Image 1: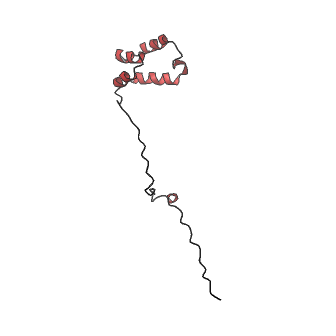
Image 2: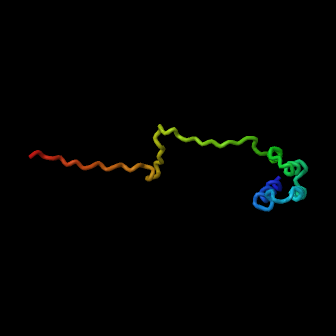
Image 3: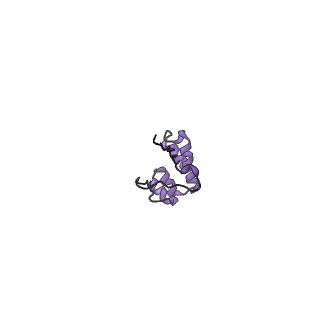
Length: 99
C-alpha cells in the first residue's frame, strides 16, 4: 500500500494533476499502479472512506485543546529563571524625625 501513499503524495505535489487533467488520464495513471483492484477502484472513485479502510487508517480522529479557566496560578518551571516573576523592590522608608 506504500504505492497508494506515494501516488497520493505525487498528486498533492503536482498542480497539473490536481483535477486540471482529464478523468481518463487520472484513471489511466491509477491503472498503472500495482496496488490491487479494490485500491484502484477506491482511487478512481475518489472514495476516501474505502481507501482509508484499505490502508488501515483511523475511523475517527479528534483534536482537543484544554485551556485553564484562569482561576489557577500559572505553572512555573523551577529550572528557568525567566518563568519567575520579578519581585518589585520595596521602597526605602525614611522615617522623619519630629523637629
